[in-house]
Each structure stands twice: as C-alpha cells, then as structure tokens.
Image 1: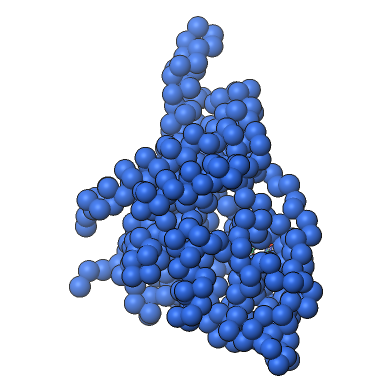
Image 2: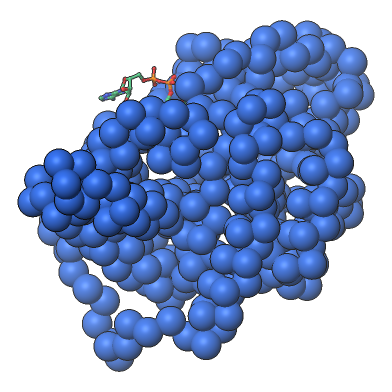
Length: 391
Ligand SMILES: Cc1cc2nc3c(=O)[nH]c(=O)nc-3n(C[C@H](O)[C@H](O)[C@H](O)COP(=O)(O)OP(=O)(O)OC[C@H]3O[C@@H](n4cnc5c(N)ncnc54)[C@H](O)[C@@H]3O)c2cc1C
C-alpha cells in the first residue's frame, strides 16, 4: 500500500491552495454584498484559467484539465476552505455534458470549459425532491422539436448561467429526459430568488417554463436517459462534496487551534483547558478519518470496472454521509471555541457554520445516503466495507 500523494497530486494541491488563497481575498466582499461585482467575477475567472484548474472533470482533448478522480479530490479539498461558496467559481461543468453530441459539445460544453458559458442543472421541483420520479415538468413533441412546461426550484447558478440542463417527462410515456435549453428562450421566467441560510456567490432561483420551444437537437444523451445520466455521476459528485467538506473542516480547525492558543481567559490560554482540548481532538479525528476514506474511494473509483459500479456508489454515499456530517460536528465545535466571535459573520467559522449545513441536503440528503448504504448491505452483503485487493 502507498498512501502518499503522487508528485502530480502534490503539485495540484499547491496550485489549488494558491488559487484558494487568492480567491479568499474576496470572501468578506461576498459576505457583505451577498455576491460579487462583475469585475471580481472576471478577475477570478482569469485566475482560474491561469491556474489551469478550470473544468478539472473534463478531458484534456476538449480543453479540460483532465484530472483523475483522486486528483480532483485533492483539488476540491483545498477549494472547500473557501467561504461564500467561492469554490463554485472554479467551475466544473456538469458531468452530464459528457453526453453531448459533437454539435452540442461545440455549442455548450467547450464554451463552458473555456469559461465563456455557464451551465446549471434543473432537476428539483416543488413536488419532486428526493424522489425525482415525481416529475411534473413535461416535454411535448411538436413539428419543431419539443415544448417544455413546468417549474424548477433550487437551480444553483441559475442567475449566472446562460443555459440550463432541464429534466422533463417526455412524451405520453413520460420518459425522463434531459434537455439543453438556452436561458433566454422565450417562455422561461425566473420567478423567485430565495434568500437561503448561507451566503453563496451565486443564487439558487426558481424558474417556470411556459410553452418553451426547443429543437429536436436539445435532447441530451437520448430520450428516457435522464435519470440514468444524472445518477451515473453521483459517485463523483458525492466524493467531491466529501472532499470539500473535509477541507472546510480543516480550515475551521486550523483557525480554532490558533485561536485557542492565543485567547486567554482565567489567566491562561483556553487551549490549556481540557474541555477545549477535547473539542480540538474530536475535530482532528473527524477530519483525519474522513480524509483517508474519501481518498481511498476516489482511488478505487479511478480503477473501477463496470462490475464495481454499484458497490462504489454505496462507498461514495458512505463518504458523502460521513464527511458532511463530520464537518457539521467540527464546525459546531469550532464556533464554540471561538465564543461570541464565532457568531460574528466577519469570522470564517461563522460563515462555514451556515454553509456546511446544505451538504447534508443536496446531492441526496443524509437519509437518502443511508438508504443507499443499507440497500447495498441488504442486496450484496458487507463487501462494501472491504479494501480492494491488488492483482
Ligand atoms: C442550496 C440548495 C441548492 C440546490 N441546488 C440544486 C440544483 O442546482 N439543482 C437541483 O435540481 N436541485 C438542487 N437542490 C435541491 C436538492 O437536491 C433537494 O433539496 C434535495 O434533493 C432534497 O429534496 P427536497 O428539498 O425536496 O426534500 P424532500 O425530498 O421533500 O425531503 C424532506 C425530508 O424527508 C426526507 N426523506 C425523503 N424521502 C425519504 C425516505 N424515503 N426515507 C427517509 N427520509 C426521506 C429527506 O431526507 C428530508 O429530510 C438544491 C437545494 C438547496 C437547498
């Protein structure tokens, strides 16, 4: 066994850290203004391109950074340190865009990789959350292609994106299908921009679709393929959440360790009190074990055969469930260690406290991850716990 970072991973980690430190300069501005001005978006986009960390999940032949999953995890861990969800400015095109036809790739994916266009993914609806099968958005065929009608909620980056990947029930058979839709297509309306608990550099608006006409060529990946395409990327996306939440927790612990050493009460640094030490130690445990497991599963994902797919899916669910819940525990303790300052939005721990909460909800709630893990145990036994064997 070799648990060391490869030289390439070590370099990526350093590059991602340098980019993270640069972007962190915008955290306060983002918090105070609930977003950033266009000039800041432009500067950060240039920095991402200079760092070569755009579209790390896309192949080099299309202009992406073409990183392995283990390498992506290394990058995401660093980016996860950022507050204001500024990590999302280091864009990763939706993996579903790999299913583009060559023409769609030229029109949608390659401009996203270059930082010229931006996608958003619209699956969730008022009545379809954890259960996307309850889809009410429809696509009806006509002589010019398809007509979309329905409503989508929580569309992350929906304010900034210029096209959407929309899941709709197509035709009388209600085949779940993804459509590539330019956001300025007539009939699309951004109806509400809710204020959420976190500060996020982009919004998560709600949209309605009223008789939105798209061409036959708007179908992404085939009619009826919508769920399968969306599901096929859960393993990667959930590992990235595990990585980001681990990075966020590590930053919180660094800040809290330093604060505990510096802050004096009752005539001594609070770090000298065992109740504080216990919290610091529990944070270190949560971070260390989740980092190791996330890297293990990412390593396995890079070597997986189609036969491993289902078990790997459950392993990614373990990583996402465990890391997102552990980071929630870590940030709660770190806020406590900071005392009243931990409740002040000027402090990164306060912002992370609000921001890490959603990681237990999106990309499948903690309950859904538990259902996946339990399903794997019931169907295939406890092999999900095994380490891979060489040979
Ligand atoms: C900030 C934010 C950004 C988002 N971005 C996007 C996006 O870009 N695109 C997109 O399509 N969606 C997005 N979402 C939506 C997100 O994926 C959903 O919120 C999530 O899947 C849960 O769906 P729901 O909110 O409808 O909750 P529900 O599904 O209604 O769940 C409510 C509760 O019931 C539990 N529950 C549901 N089913 C079961 C079950 N079978 N057994 C036990 N418990 C169950 C859930 O775990 C939860 O605790 C975003 C959400 C948020 C908050």
